Amino acid sequence: MKIEIQNINKFYKKLHVLKDVNLTLQEGIYGLVGPNGAGKSTLMRLLVAAECPVSGEILFDGKNIHANLKEYKMKLGYLPQDFGFYKEFSGREMLRYTGLIKTDLSVDKIHAQTEELLEIMDLTKKADISIRKYSGGMKQRLGIAQAFLGYPDFVILDEATVGLDPMQRITFKAFLKEYSKHKTVLLSTHIMSDLQEIADDLIFIKEGQIVYDGTLEHKDNLEALYMKYFQS
Image 1 (cartoon, one colour):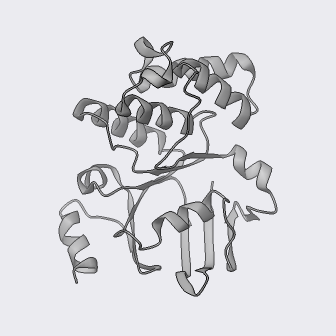
Image 2: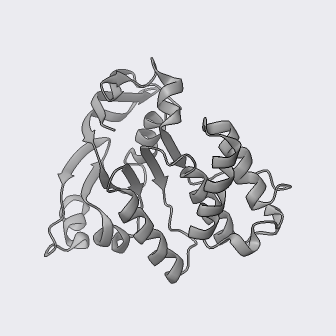
């Protein structure tokens, strides 16, 4: 799926939060990078159609996301920083319930994907335990799993690896790299080493403007590139 962000502007009262943002996203992993307050969260809220821009538009395969919202949402997966759960549900119940809401898959396929994602996120052994008993890391992994239900064409992940232990991060990054061969992933994170390893393209945002949109050559150091654009 091709995502086109065309001349987006967004204001909160008199604050100009996003300024003439233009981006094109296709298959691969895009790392969204910027300091707090740069506009990352606002851009992601616009991309999941939670808000509308003041001017400009966002297209998927040439179609406006708001004019074709139901179709777009079926192609979208999202992990916000603060993902809400029904704590009385078990992890398995939560994924099955979410699958019924957000996908048009049959019950059998939802159940099959639930088991696949529980395995990928190392939650199978805890799948029938109440979410209220989950640790922070387990909740994070469950949040990641729900974002991939239906195996959407476009997945937006906000600080996905926070709370994962080293082995879980390695497994998750390998899964992302394979997944992104035919899908589009936007990963917002402050963990530079994650992006250094897996990002195909980097998007730097500063004070509401895109200041860098390009690849990271293997020889490049991401932290040095970051300092080039964001050091005061």
